Image 1: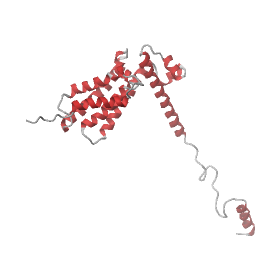
Image 2 (image 1 turned 45 degrees about the vertical axis):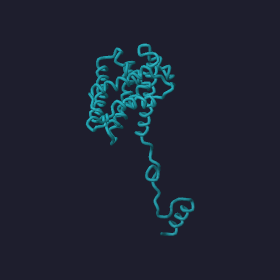
Image 3 (image 1 turned 60 degrees about the vertical axis):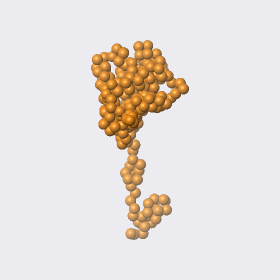
Image 4 (image 1 turned 90 degrees about the horizontal axis):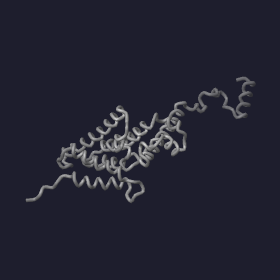
Length: 241
C-alpha cells in the first residue's frame, strides 16, 4: 500500500467508517432492514375484515333474539353497530344470509365440542358430555334463538337444504357417541336415535327460556343439564338377589 492510500484509509477510520480493507454494503442490500411484506398487510386487513364481519353477525343475532327475524331490518343492525347500511352489505348480501350466518356460527361452537371430544382418550359418555356442554352453552348464547327458529322463517330452498344438512351432521355425531358409549359400556343400552332426539330436544328448549343476566350462567346451565343426562345415561347396577 503506498503512502497516499494509507492516508486515505486512516482518514476513513477516523471519520467513523469501516476498517481498512472492509467493503461497505450497498444501500438496500445486506445490512439494511428488509422492506415490509405486502402479504403481511394483506393478512392484517383480512383479520380486520373477519373481526368486523363477526361483529355484524353477532349484532344480527342479538337483534333477532330481541325483535324477531321479520321485525329486524338491516337498518336496525347498522344502527346498533353505528355504521351505515352499505357497510353491512359489504359483509353480507341480505338479511337471509345474516340469519344463515348466525346459524352457522352456532353450529361451529358445537363442532368445536366434537373436535374437543375427538382428542380425548376417555369413555364415550364423557366425550358426549363435552359435546353436550358446548351444545347447551350455544343454546344459551345469542345464537340460540337463530338455531331453533331458523327453519320457521321464509328461507330459500337452497339455504334450507344447507341448514338441514348441518342439523343432520350434529344429530349423527351425537348418535355416534351414544353408540360408542353403549359399546364401551359407559352408556346404558338404549336407542341412539331416540336418545339423541331427547338430548337435543331438551337442549334446544334452552333458547326459548334462557335470558342473560339471570341467576345461572350459560356454563352453569350446561353443567346442570349434563348432571341430569348423566344420571339417565350411566350404566345400571344389577340388583343383588
